[in-house]
Image (cartoon, rainbow, N blue to C red):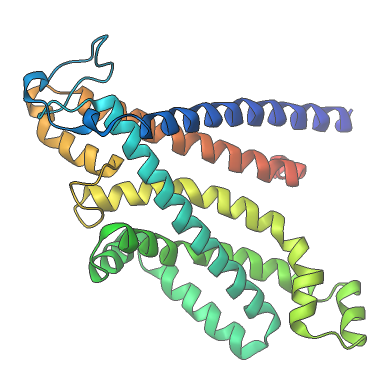
Length: 280
């Protein structure tokens, strides 16, 4: 009976991941199509400014007549690219430091753990704003600020997993055979850590997108002439008093949708890799 219930739960998660995966493929296809639309669609057209959603402009137009649908597609594409870059950088940094902390002795472990505690003691948003400001903002500043502030969580997970594997029988045998620590880490430990790394990477991605939009919204990220969701939402705050609700609603829904879908995918991957987590 217990196995039947567990199998049903796994099948339900697989179906949910299939639906979310198809939705993401459709969304990515729409963004690719949107990026290939002629640049004239993003050029100001004052004769069509401040138009509410209609058949011609499903998402309406902004204060200078630019089509909001095209701007949202382009902005979401930009935010996703920055989110991918920053989450990959942060996750790779966490993987290297987590392996180093667990394999290179107590001194290295103490230093890395101290940096982890230091980064986690400072609020993410404050640290990201400081780093982005020091780097001059832009794509580079935002990506690095998000990557630098999101590695500690995965580092602690990788470190804990490696500490358990370090005393495993196959690792002890490899040490007795004279294999180097690097060879043991790459060939014997890394494959066992990759599932946790993958889950952490997928779950980090929506946080990276949200924080990129937050930094840009506050004026410390991408420049205002860059098409990004944070820029669009920042502009919409000036338009809401004029009744232009569509300039905030549709980009907000698109941002929430992509973040929610990736969060669901990450949670389901985590549950599929360890089905018993649902009983904790």
